[in-house]
Image (tube, rainbow over all chains, first blue to last red; front, side, top):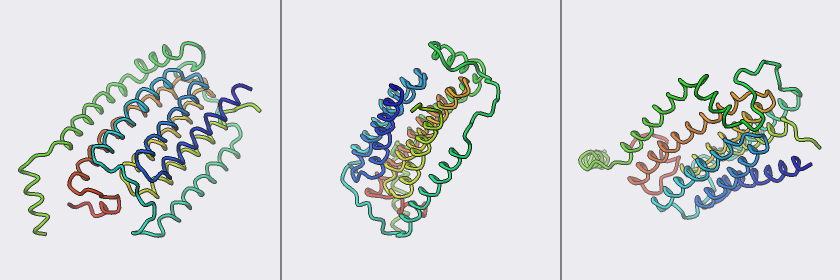
Length: 184
Length: 101
């Protein structure tokens, strides 16, 4: 009973936030609605005994990524309301709605038709339930997936270097580029 | 009413579709990145639901990697957005279609 109430409340929070992200005219409102969705997902994670992921969800997503979004919005000063009307491709809105309805119908049919999604495959990485969630996740991460884990560290270094290179403003290169742009 | 794995899958599918639709109807590159985050979260929810259904911790490990990749994606994506918008304020995704300055 409690599970049902928690699921319905968290699902309502998630969907309200998701719709708010795509419908809010102001990017700041979109970012705050995204926080709402992420908290709802964190509640769903707790309900499914993924305690570590719920904590990471709040700390990394809501705490770091959304703050980064808000920081960039404020830095660029694009926090004014934008017109949602499309001018370049008027058909785009209908195509998007068609895409949404189509994929929703497809996924819904799949979920309804495949009543028992479990294939009967044996669990490879050990049980996911119980009070030992963090320990099991750590064991899985540092034994079976240790190469993938090391590769993600490389990925993060590359991302940081890329961000630094992108954010830097080299005077000479920028001037030559703008000159070319004005000539062309 | 008991909450089964199917309900979590439905919620994940809804989040994925909402994110995909937003990606298509919004022109602000920042909001488009947020919609990508929505889609990733829908998939993460499905992974965790299957991890519990199959009693396999591997699903949660995959979600961990998705979180890392999402963080890297946001860092690079926002770097690109800052670099583009600093040169051309008010740029939308439509203006970037030709990929030239």
